[in-house]
Image 1 (tube, rainbow, N blue to C red):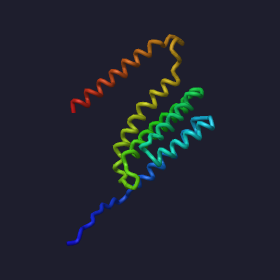
Image 2 (cartoon, rainbow, N blue to C red; image 1 turned 45 degrees about the vertical axis):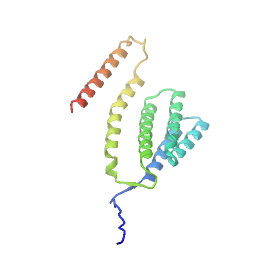
Image 3 (cartoon, one colour; image 1 turned 30 degrees about the horizontal axis):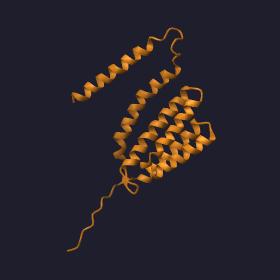
Image 4 (cartoon, one colour; image 1 turned 60 degrees about the vertical axis):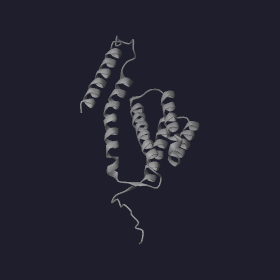
Length: 169
């Protein structure tokens, strides 16, 4: 008897290397655009390249920390905050997928749809909240100190509603 070789063919497949390269490119673009200090840009770029080659080294998250450092050291602005939120979340999601997918594998684009849906859902909530935080006056100005606890109660209430909806299914 002859041993059969089995193989599975996927019509439209994305190599895992493409996701790793995409993670590195997005991260490097984020570090260059959001961190104005050349030494930190180099450190962040190297971290993203190492994270693409060795995803389990967690170097992608070190590169993300360099982006956060750049945001913290500069003046706050709505567009920089929105861009940082988008890039950091995207790098986190892609880095997590890269950790789970072997280097030589290929995947069907449909496999990434649930991840894409979650990414868009989080962005639809996080971007308006981040915009509010950036453009809102600081506590103590014009008597808006009462908004902080009200916002906390609203967020806690939404969390309880989402938890109840999820557990009732």
